[in-house]
Image (cartoon, rainbow, N blue to C red; front, side, top):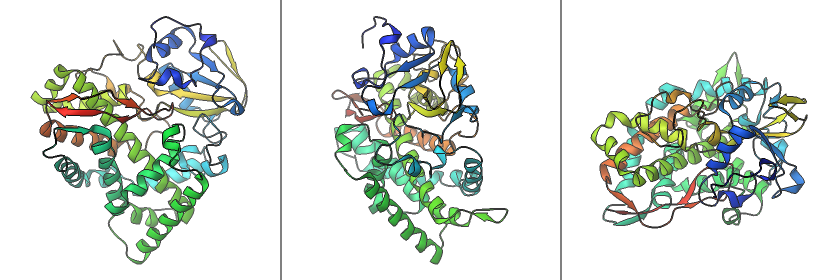
Length: 409
């Protein structure tokens, strides 16, 4: 993208031409300075109307915590109301709920998705990562995304849920249906979103029924048995949370792992710091999350007219909370565009949301998986170099690559 500043009134962040190589970080920096509450006409989806963008960390933080004004439920979390699944279907997901529905569901699933359960999965997660790396043995060239990035998180979340590896390809496909609808190449893989959702629910119900007959020591069994004050999850709630875990578990770690490894490949000095001192890897994970959050934004809708930074957001307007902008806010971080594995103060990043009710329930799993994955990759391949041009997904919501060709140096 050109370094020449643009008139903010002419900018449409929904224009995919701005996103072909990397997110438009320079543009976001300009908007933070000059137009922290910015309107885009969203010409790519003219029937959906435009959207407002919040790009400063403080504003994203405040809006995240003010569900009375900025609703997750009213128009969902995407930049369109209907991506093939209408709002009524999207609102079955906890991430597209407001209190009290959201709080009830999060309390119930929290009984099953505990830090203790995640910590107990560490050895198995390492085994999965090593197995996937073993499959690359003897290869001088491979693709970080296609040959490694897709397989590891699919198996980690699948093993946690108790689904077999033979079903991982289904889980990946359904993840794309749920989140990758913007990319025209991926979109051609299906043409009936509601039909795909029906297939997911049918699959999950069959697995759930099997768990009722034969309980296991897996997350799905724990979800079935989760109870708060006599209240339990019903069949549809279990199915929709299963889908949310598939999408979050696959997209989040894959996106941040691949982008972090790409940053380390591009900056061998930073990579060598981690090779020399493995105690820095948890901090490198946090810096990767800050610089390369898996989701570019989360959407909200205004429940009333609200004035912010001299702009009037009208009731019903869509508002996007841009994590890829807020995580690079110089009010939070010095030299925020620089990737630095020794950076301090990383507990302030917003990759898992900006706190409040919608803080990511899977943050502990993502951190565990990313730490192990980076450790094992650097052990096995300490000298990877780029072997071609990385390719990004054509999307605003998903901040990830579809291809990063590499070779052993």
